[in-house]
Amino acid sequence: MKLKILSGSLIVLALLGGILFAADHIDAPAVTGPGNTSPANDITDIYAFQSPTDNGKMVFVLNTQGLLAPAATGATQFASNVMYEINIDNTGDNVEDLVIQCLVQNGKMRVYGPVAVTMPGTTSMVNTSGPVTEVSVTSYNAGSPVAATNSNGISVFAGPRDDPFFFDLARFKEIIAGTQTGFRNPAVDAFAGTNVMSIVIEVPKTLLGSATTINVWGETKSR
Amino acid sequence: MLQRNRLTLMLAVAAVAILTACDKDDDPVDNFDISGTYSQNDQMARPAINTVFVGSARKNEFNTTVPSAMDAAFNAQFQSVLTGFGYTSNALGMDKATFAGALVTDVLNVKMNGTTTFFDGTNVLTGRALADDVIDTELLLIFGGPMGTANPGLTTDNVDSNDKAFLSSFPFLASPH
Image 1 (cartoon, rainbow over the protein chains, first blue to last red):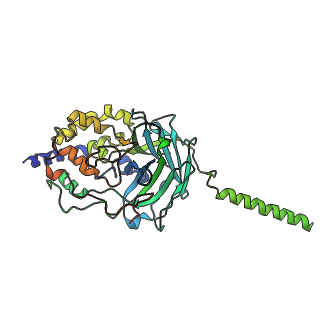
Image 2: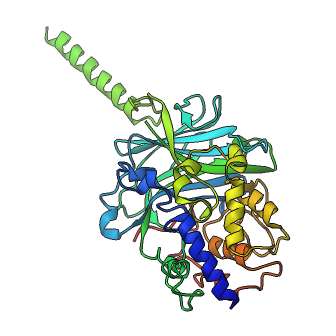
Image 3: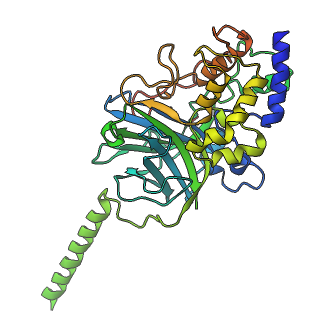
């Protein structure tokens, strides 16, 4: 009975929220809907964790363009008019103090920062006054990932990867639609076998300020 | 004359060699186009927040609202969605207003020293690692009630890990399918 009430609530949610998807895959009409011209803007997930290989470094992952089938991955590219940006607040006010800005042009990614922000907000220009790191975009057919590390100890990668996100999305949608009342076991991971266009940046913690906790979010911006 | 030509040729060869050396240098001095002003299209931090808590009419707006302004703009909507879920409290002891307030400012809190994870049974919201089962964490906090035991059919999706093993070294994500 309780579940029945809940599933009724979920139907209300479905009406409130429109069609529900996943982590942030295809989350809003401007990045995925009709008339959208740049799916490269769609962020699927962001990750931030201490480097498994170096306690003195932090890793940021910004994934975009989710649910790529293997057959479609080789032809998928980062957009040359998009800035992929990691925002970092290290003063606890949820306003970015540092950014890491990534541009991809002609098969190469250039990473600017971390660099102090002069004008926070929803518009940005490239800030070239911090560290700059460049790497070739790893192609779909590459035998191993291409990474580059600059003299500041910043490592960068750009290219297609397996989507690390996992979720029984189809069942969740059935629950939302009211045709099921709970998850199933065994489940089906809707993201198994799919790829994303991924940017990975490893940064020495010393370049991120002295706060004990930082707040992090990812953005895509276009010109 | 022959000598002079040879000298010119040698200089030219030397110049090409220098140019080649410059080109090989990792110092990025070539013509990357960094002009223009970039305007925001998408943003995210915690998984599924915009997806679950923001109504379709305002999803674009959420993606272009700076995190410091999200609470004022979206707190009421988050609370109404939690009401729709029958939410009262969760395993973190958060009442509806507190939980909505914690969710609505969509940033990842990341601890600079020690374990970085969405939730590992001990640490809560100290980062997000690749293997973290973030959906189960969110389902448990939304549907699990104060003891985490309510609605057992809705607090795990029964997908507990990725379909491919992660790499032990940079860039850590698995190769594409």
